[in-house]
Image 1 (cartoon, rainbow, N blue to C red):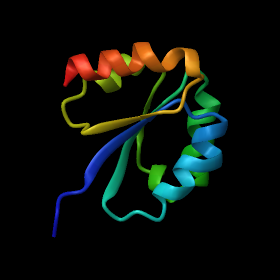
Image 2: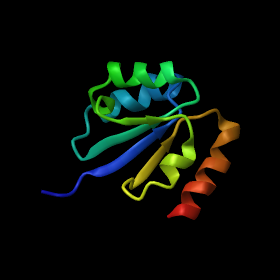
Image 3: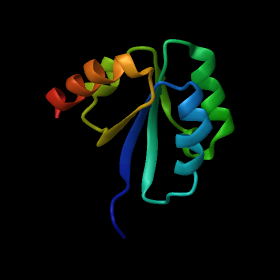
Image 4: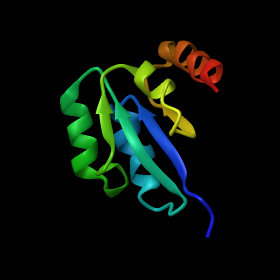
Amino acid sequence: MSKKLRMAIIGCGGIACGAHASNYDNIDDIEIVAVCDIKPERMELIKSKYKSCAGAWTTEDYMDIVNCPDIDAVDICTPNYLHAPIAIAALNAG
């Protein structure tokens, strides 16, 4: 059996709840280990609505995720203007 990809979702608004998280529920090789949003209620909603996110830890600071060595990949679901700084930080962290 192959190792699961340990992912984090950064941004728990419309696109994360409306498209991404629902699809992760159907992918066995991905484990959502963390979710991040500046609004705690969005993180709680995504965790309660999607089984793939249920066990994820939460943070309001995406740098907590970027700096976590146990995360293999991030799904950036923030508004478009925030994609570049988050992606650059994630790439720089490896």
